[in-house]
Image (cartoon, rainbow, N blue to C red; front, side):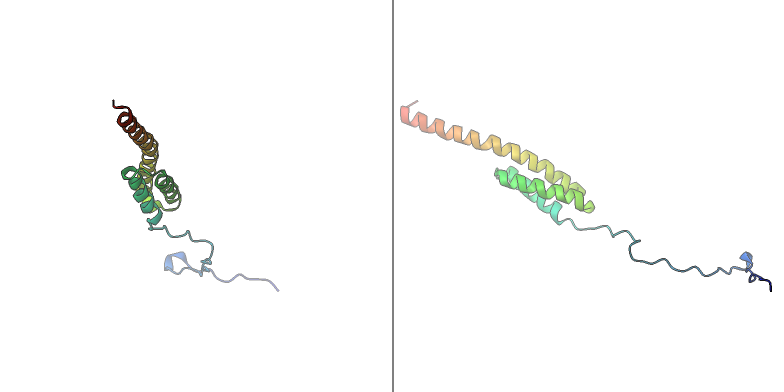
Length: 115
């Protein structure tokens, strides 16, 4: 007894042989996130650290902007500006408070000794 293979279809007839579907689990890339929550809060805290020079706002804004930059591709621009404003707010907080205390102490000194 000899084996005879089945007849192959003619490719010009438009008939395509059956192709099993690929399993859908584990193969598809995750959908790109459109959330911008962390980036937005980082920008808000960065701006607030410039307006109200409290260094804790600058640190929180920098951390949230850094996480937003890593995890939220849709909010990349906001995250970058959040980092910039947080760094500027951090620097401004360390300039503002010593300057304010120096002015207060100078005013108190001049009021006490009459300069």
